[in-house]
Image (tube, rainbow, N blue to C red; front, side):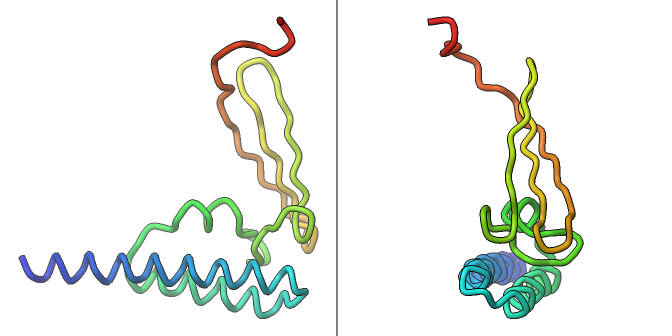
Length: 116
């Protein structure tokens, strides 16, 4: 029983530290220091692997899979929204390497602003 509690603490620490490193990486990108940002992201991912933890949503959606830099809208990424009837697609393009990510999202149900 003691071992499972220790493992949970280690996993929680790994997630907290990796999120802290991600926020430092975003700050480094805004300052124009891309190599430092890549190192921060790499170190955060290594912590998550060591702790045997699933990647948080920030790492899955806002880190370029090709070059490993954090995607900051307007600085290292362009973000567009494409929509059709059933779903919206958020398209993110890395401005460093050109990698494109498409994330489908469901439309929210409710009042359509064009009908009123």
